[in-house]
Length: 107
Image 1 (cartoon, helix red, strand yellow):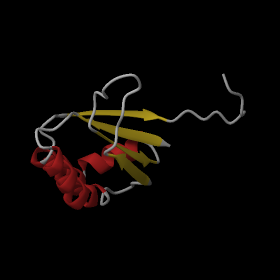
Image 2 (cartoon, helix red, strand yellow; image 1 turned 45 degrees about the vertical axis):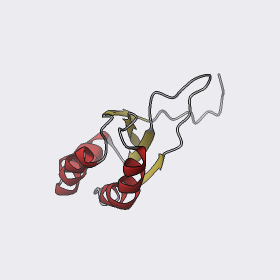
Image 3 (cartoon, one colour; image 1 turned 180 degrees about the vertical axis):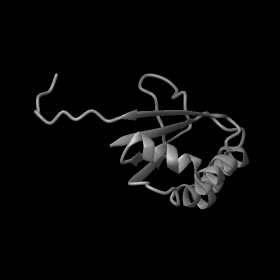
């Protein structure tokens, strides 16, 4: 599996972010081709201090190629173009392959 994370900084208008994100942006993101699952949180908290992010979104794809194809698709371009409508605090994107610890050992 391959994961894409988006970290959103604190917006100028948190209520607008929450409303727009849940009613408009999340339904757009759900249309990404090859999307296996997605989840988000608008209740991000830091341990021992303020969290550096307001919202976190994560998505899973079968592979890096599947993620890149989704982002380059018409739906992916629509999602990317929509970010400016709510994310005044900016966004940071990270992606990575998930490690498989199938032997069950813990460090």
